Length: 119
Image (cartoon, rainbow, N blue to C red; front, side):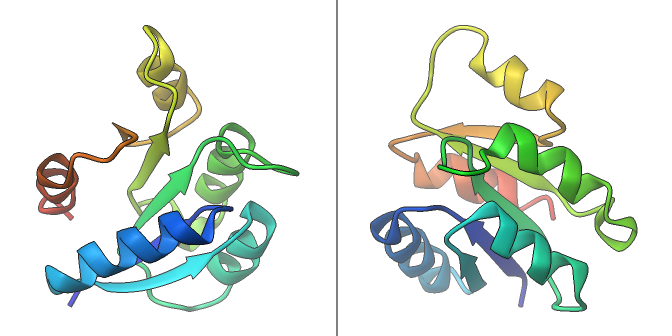
């Protein structure tokens, strides 16, 4: 069973994503801030992929993704940015920050599952 880390400051988003992914046989862990997620990721908790909200207070996804990618044992872990910003150039901005893929909100579950099927 693949484990997905969901990083989002909105508990409703975590709840909805977790419920959707669990119904598709994924295991989910969550953090409601990037600093909490970094602490978790520096440890040995198994994580197969990371879904990160790009707009969070304190530390946003653009700041957090390079820090995640700097953790030696997490460099190969796919990081998928999740954002309500779906303007021209947002996908490229997320990818430049180090994201491996990009999904806009509201989340297209079929697209999310296609992305996660590659991990």
